[in-house]
Amino acid sequence: MHSNRREALGLGLVMTAAPASALGADDAASAEAALMAFLQSFAACDLPAMEAAFASDATSFNVVNAGTGDAAPARDSIKRAPGMPEGMRRIALTLPKERPGPPFHRPDLINDLMVQVEGDVALCTFHFDSPERLGRRTIILVRRAGEWRILHIHASNQQF
Picture 1 (cartoon, rainbow, N blue to C red):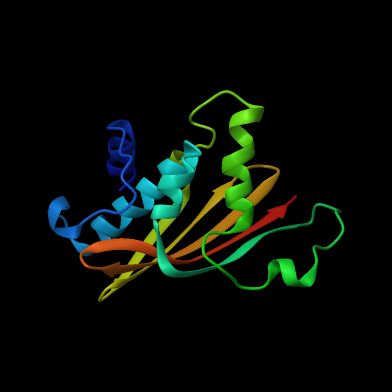
Picture 2: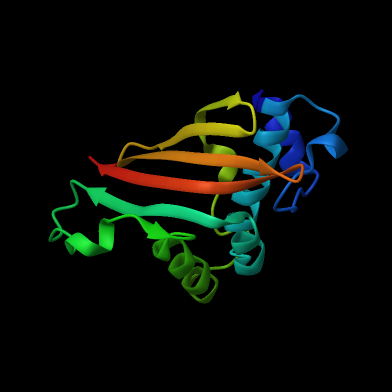
């Protein structure tokens, strides 16, 4: 599975939604391709492509960084919100001003990707692991009109 993901990234996969029939692959593989395309658009801080990856009725939980010693965020800022997480939007707008790229992130560094498909819903879980931080992600995709879109995203980070 890891070599397929690297091959897809190496080909410069930049689409934001992958038609299942066009990929000629099983449901889990087409859902994974859509997920990786979204992560690639995030790596490039391509805000229009990122936004296009979300279903019109998508929801999110903004990232919470636990263990940083920072003050706790405002309660309302970490409740469920419509659409793409505000923190993700902020990153896409600020990183290109702060560092060279693209890519600004490394989606090929995700660990332990699991894609579970039930009908037209795919549950994608993975993490980013470094000595300083464990980032956990849950992304729920829904297939509508043959294309996978993000229905919900939940991100959390644990600092060590």
